[in-house]
Image 1 (spheres, rainbow, N blue to C red):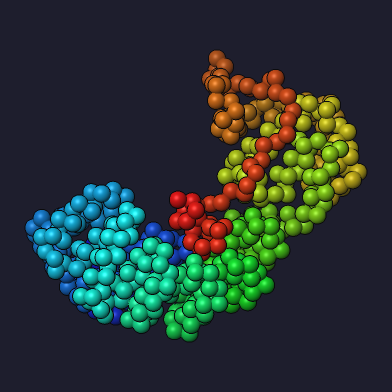
Image 2: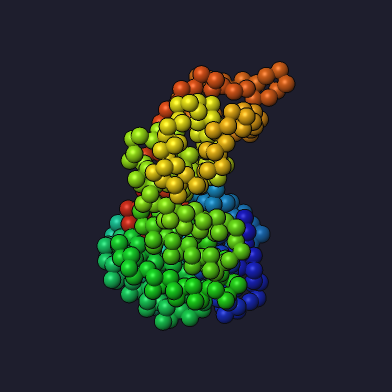
Length: 464
């Protein structure tokens, strides 16, 4: 378990200003919207060491050669690993042995909160704020507990008070804005962040705030307003090496989320800004290509999807060229590549069943046909078709296990078979063409914004 001084990369001799500078430096490296776990550790260390009383108590524990230091360190380890009951047991024992150890009680409150016991956490934090009314960290902890309990109005008051004690702490501003979001107060949520922009001047915090403003506008359906924040964000990031990676990465993920919402044009503007900020990033350029591709072909593809005269397997081949991974329900490029291979192998092996559909695709949707014209043109030649069949058979060992995993629910009684050379054998010799499997709902990543509009990440909200 890392020492708080080690986390902030400072020493016990450094001043409060040194600690604050170290905190901002690390927030630049681990912004909260991208590195939540790392940011939480940094915040915890900063809030403990930036307050004179809690720093004194932390030092007293850290300098003891007794069991107390070991117990405290063990409790933090259990807390970090998610073994909450063991952490609580140790901390309750320590708090009972010395009721004046506020830092122990603060950690106990955190353990209660993580263990879904907001009632006990509130009692702890209310006691701490009464003993240390000028401690911004304790006021912030109390606000978090109120919010966790569902008491947004009390949380808002507590966050306001905490910000009055430490206006440099970005997590307090984000917490206050988030409380207004949960309370369905759009303008208040935005006003908090706009006020923060006027107080917290460093570029790293500003970029985080602009990203949050974009997410609030999206969650409340105010799509026309996101572009003002987007332009400001790009202006800050494009010439700043310290923040450009995080900003471009975040915009790329928001663009992906907007695609799931059916906001293709908004997604296109965000991904184009991301590519403008990081013009050589392969992942961002790939996402840009996918989104631009889809927005370029969306009208024609939607018509194709409704055309019952073109068989599903043929339409699916085009879908893998036009739709993004999330829209297809694919978890990654490897799975998408495997499923595209599968669809093509069906059409290849049962070509006579699809000749009419392919001709109609070429006639009625020439732009879409052009996306896979090389494959479709080769199908018309018996020699080329045979060559492709041989080549696809060679690729089966690469894609077979991925396809098995994808279809495991339907094929759970079938085992993988290997020939005498240890190669993967084709299990689908008797396969009958069918409608391609596409998940009904778009995949939501655990770190994506929750679609319920709470402002939280999916894994922290409905994804629990």
